Amino acid sequence: MYNYKTSGVCSSEINFDIVDNKITNVCFIGGCNGNLQGLAKLLEGLEPEEAIKKLEGISCDGKATSCPDQFAKALKGVLLKK
Image 1: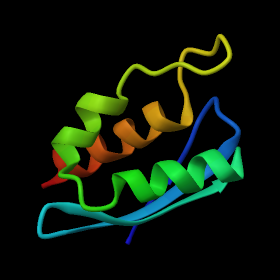
Image 2: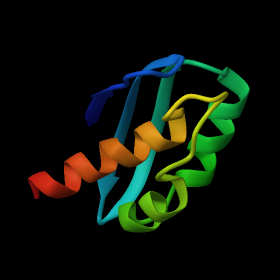
Image 3: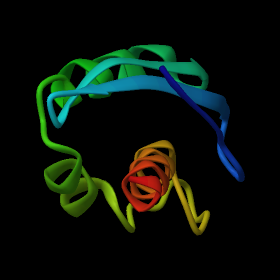
Image 4: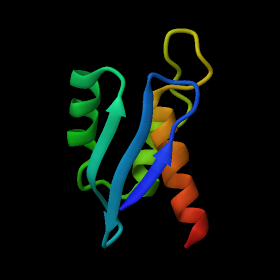
């Protein structure tokens, strides 16, 4: 299980797994509960690189980042460590 502490967004952390190069068990702590539950379900089964392409650079309410962008950063961090 990976745990990423977010920065600059409403959610405080993101927990997830990567199994056989597929994203699974995504859970956002805090933030817009319904939207983030939906995002977590949509991410299930995607390859990390595909999710990064879709989520990176999304901003929220005039902020430089968003919960989806933070998840892309979390995934990039995991891929860099491999």
